[in-house]
Image (cartoon, rainbow, N blue to C red; front, side, top):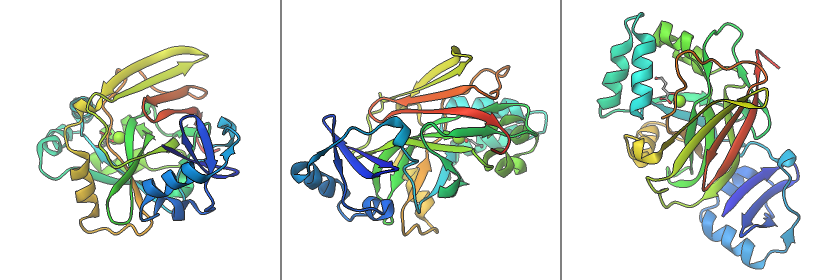
Length: 279
Ligand code: DO4
Ligand code: MG
């Protein structure tokens, strides 16, 4: 079942049929004490609603913050070691890749999250910008995984590589986080074979494409969640991006008007256009 937040309200989709959820607050929906059971009951007894148009979709977030895990794929470790070498920071990435404690960082408040079709930004003071396609989990206030979405952890690689202490500036700025198009509800882990695909379009042509799968993710997602909840409370739940396994070649940098298309098959496709600087 897929959960959508739209300009017209909240909807559940099952077997290509949509049903209106009679709760207007997204926070109330995603924190329902038995979310899956609640949605099943709506599908069983509700009236079929009109199909949701992509232009009506909102980011599937209201009162949830977004956090992110880093260096959870070998590809991310290697790319970051190379980018930080000159600054002497390469070693950090190798150490965090193999340490028991993962890298976790604050990514975005809800207000700053771009939804499907909204714009993602590249910084005006960055010269090397990339999208990071990441499976993103929604955890409820109890720290339980209740669903999955597609995330884009936009990053400025030159700023990050110059000094690891610049990470928040490389990662947290207007338009640096996108989520959507929906929440795939379910607590069952997605299979390791689940593919994550990235396509970057420039003037309508594919400029870069790449793929990975969850089998390449080094740590169990439940372990990332356990660290996140250790000394933090999230009464309204929280999104956790699980890291990138796709890094375009070093010569590549995003440009204004590029389109970033990220697909995780059981969930869907998140597509955003890139702009430079503040809207
Ligand atoms: O260590 C910097 C950030 C890593 C990250 O965002 C990732 O691996 O996805
Ligand atoms: Mg990332």
